[in-house]
Length: 332
Image 1 (cartoon, rainbow, N blue to C red):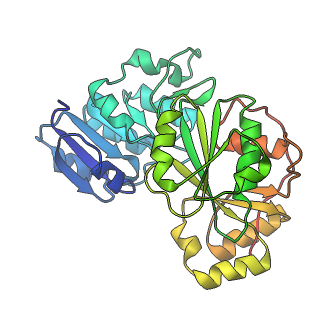
Image 2: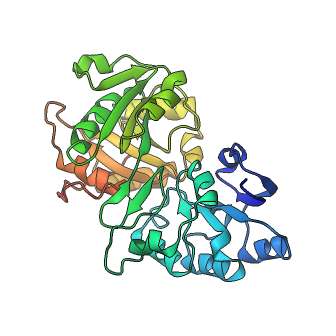
């Protein structure tokens, strides 16, 4: 039995609703620590599962510290989002220092943490004291302070503008990543992978994605070329924009609120000729934030310094620390 648990959710409400655990109370919205203290004073529970986006100003570590002081830290399980701040070694180290040992980016790991909570020994290396071999459940399996993310990450790539290059980019990233990681690559509802004549590339229907992930549970990274909609199975989605004037005008004319709805998501410019100044102009005019800018790449070359930098930005710290051309931007 999981015992009696409470859930505080916001961005990940739907995912947490589908979690098969015993829940006595579930509240949704954005809350201050004071709000939560008032809500759960004298309220018995086994574990408090908190979607970190439900805490106002959650990137401020002092807010999280206040949470740990007002509740039994051993009863807290934090579901992290994709924020670079929240996933930084410094932030994770501070969580451990304040006694919060149970945190993850994978909703399905929550059930494991309820029954098998981390002790300090499990997360000691996260404190950045003297390194170590310890692990903490983050995204399907673990995060290692020396190696970055370990375990499995399922990352999807989706074209926002027509022909933004998701298929070729996924292929190039697969070649880059497999130097340091065990990688599987899959195309959903498409048949373009066959053009690469690489038998390791797999094309399936969206209904088969869950089985594919389970069958490849030993893979550290699964790259997904998304065609259509895939709900709930992908940990993070990269939205690709090819910043040509005609393609951008077409995108915005079809959906004027597209960039507003993608606020906080990872938008990547692909096949881009833009300068840093251009990118900054685009961000101002579209009201969005560009996660990364990737230029036109020769798909006959299987090692690109800019892709190493991109992968490092995504948290793949085993990749070589190679410099790349400074790029970024659009929207005129």
